[in-house]
Length: 227
Image (cartoon, rainbow, N blue to C red; front, top):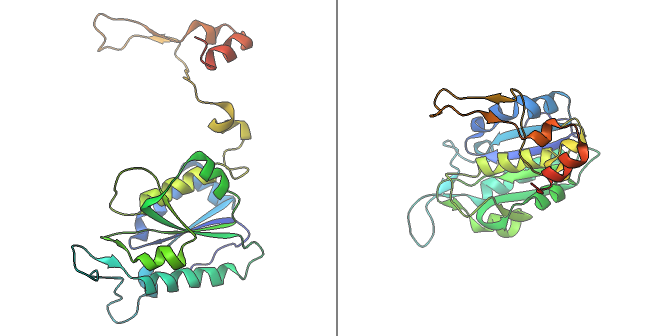
């Protein structure tokens, strides 16, 4: 079990391939947020809770069919161990999430809701799926990131962590940086105009004049879609 600072908003990722998770969260904004202890992302190899010499985490499905299924007993022990570790801290509001194609669709509203928790535990499926008893008895909820299928739950977990982290005070620096607050609109920067070598005939790509006007009311109106 990794040592974590339990007063930090912490994301726990249970995975068969934890090495795929760590690099992204060591870079850029989220890397800085971790170094400042605003958030912590802990990836765990579920094999640590598998029994036997071979540390088997999956088995063939009852009733037949293709693929292998992640074992409920292994995941139960993993989640129980993490919860026990969390219980030693002072902040304990915890949510256990199973990433699933059958889960509720993840949205910005969901990210805002999940940001209220101190600890989020993500169970990443892989292979044919996860024993249904995990969804019924271990996880608090199931979430899906879209109507498509991926090879595992690691990318969905990373996506959700990224989205939730943006609501943690200090991660983005300024609250007004949140797109949910400032809105989404086209943005431009220098140079004011340039002509790509590939453009035939050569044509200048220019910044809209309103953004150069200095008239903040007109700019706000343009950004609101009145252009």
